[in-house]
Every structure is written in structure tokens, then in C-alpha cells.
Length: 202
Image (cartoon, rainbow, N blue to C red; front, side, top):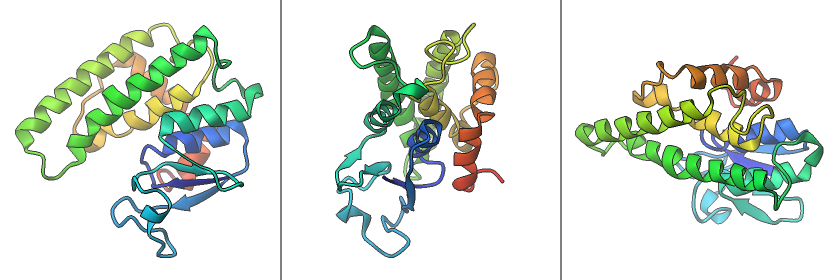
């Protein structure tokens, strides 16, 4: 398998999941600015959407969209319990979290990374994100992870997007449950390995 990624982008989520699952994979560095690979290949010829992540299977099949990719990967290593069984109520709860993170958190950051966005508008987007993260903080009360005691693919995704907060002035310091969650996830060996591989930590 190949994972097309950009350091620290949302592709960090499936990167973490690949390592948690113990699957064999190759990382392919992709520039989200130039849309080129290191060998000069036009990334649009691989993914017409131009975004990371993209997972390419050994048979040439390609899958885009992080929430879809991480569920596929979890299902390849069911013994790791990175996602509840397909069709179960717990799996629907996992999908509920993945949808919330992708639509309400992940996409909420997009305007803040846009240099053309007026600062007055960014203030509103920051406020909205803080409110959404504050709700997530309440859901982490008394829990190690989003679904309870077990780390799942939703936790990898939440960790990834919450990493962006300091870069764009979203202040989450008052959210103690979220801070404890982030420390817990950050300490996982697979997370450390993924972040080192992407040059995010030494």
C-alpha cells in the first residue's frame, strides 16, 4: 500500500492508523502547494481532487477521503480493535464521530489557513471552533478516548485536527479533558513514529 501524504496535514490520521494496525505501507510525500510529488509527477494525475490523503492498494485501487480510508485500514486489522465491527451500533457511533470531526472541526479550520480570508471573518471561525471543541471536551469527561477505553481511528483524526489549533490562533488551553486526551494519544508509540516520520517531532 502507498499513502500519499503531506506533513502534518489530515493525512497524518491514516498514517497513524497504518502504524497502529501494523500494516505494510510506503509513504509518498506530496506537496499540497505545488501539487507535485518529489519526482515531479503531477499529483492531479493520481488524485484529480488534488488533496491528501490518498491510499493506493497494491492492485492499483485508490481510495480518497480520510474517514473512508481509516475505516478501510481498521477493517484490514480487526484484531487491533481500531474500529468496532461493521454493522454494529458502536460502528455507527464511530462514524458519527468521524462525520463530526470532518464536517465541524476539520472544515472549520479551512478558512483560517486561507491567506485571503479577512481577519474579521477569521475571528468568527475561531470562535465557532472553540465552541465545537468545548463540546468535544465534555464528551471526553471520564473517558480515555472518544468511544471509551479503546483507541480508535476517530481518536487519530481528532488528534490530527486539534494539532492545527496553535498554528491559527485557536485557543484550546482551557479544555482540560481534551488536553489530557491529546497527551494520551501523543504518547502512543505509533503516533510518535508517524510524527517522527513526517518530521513533526525529533
